Length: 360
Length: 78
Image (cartoon, rainbow over all chains, first blue to last red; front, side):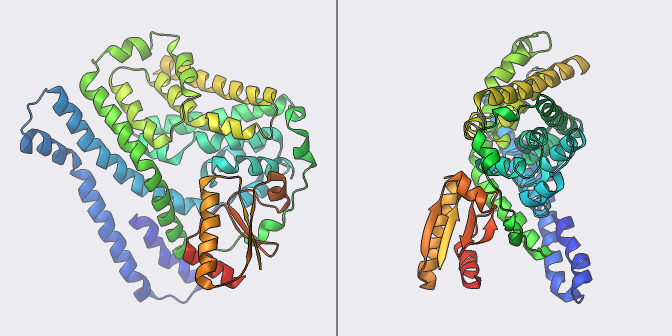
């Protein structure tokens, strides 16, 4: 947190008269907040153990105790991580708008366009409720269909909340795998859809719609104070929406942690069961949860012996392919194109699932 | 003054509409507030992310959900 705020003065200096006195209090507040955050974060495990086994006097090895300790440790940890991540991402996103992304993508060719679109999908603010206007805005101004799909796949699939929660709970390797393979799926699926030349399966009125690009007037230049406040707004908006899911997810995780036998998942979702990956994807598609809620469940599954590839496939199909988004896209896409979209992305997720189960 | 709220019916769009009405009431400003849900009309205004606000034909923001106080400033500035 402090890192973001500390950058203020340096950036402002270029445009305004340097005034260290004005920023000093903010820097001190940021440093104090960062210190308090770190203190809380690094003492969580000690606190959870003290509470459950010390203050409540529960016996070690007890199932309920183990479930409660898991919850008391994980819930504040995930919420603390969420706070920092959402704030940081809110600031990063303030540098991007759908308008700007569209201008960068217009007229791009396949391949290079797919790569760029997938990367921009990660950092551009996007809400699935504006998927339709965004789709039309893209395809009617010269962004190729396949490139547009790369964007539409990457935007929900690579979720910043999921990314950093994976980092916090499993370490950088799993987070990196998720980021890398998510990008590859978005690039690959968009590329395939582009190669198939499926423009005829876009509803006819879409291409007939004239897109006015007059909205460029809405792009204002932002100062750092505004970027910080958009980070704060993101925290207010996202954290207030996802915290119940996060807590519910961790509670389920705690239940699995305490009560599900160690190797149960190994037989159902382990490497040996070849059918587990497609099954995980099929179950995941109609399920709709936000990334923050699904991660604790993922963690609990992994701990009980489920294979990483299977779990990753499950998670990706839950957050990357969602029924509500498909229903929204039906307004602009004919059924065969929707089916192709779900099929290609689903196949990509399958490949990733198998790959990890074989490699790791 | 004519104010159009552009949105496909997501919760954020409804919140913008309500907040615009609150802002107008607090400012004691008279304006026609219209909700535009038709995608083709939204696109024709050059808007790609909803909710968006159009005042007298000019897009003043898109893809945001401002507070009532922010909306008051926006309306006064238009």
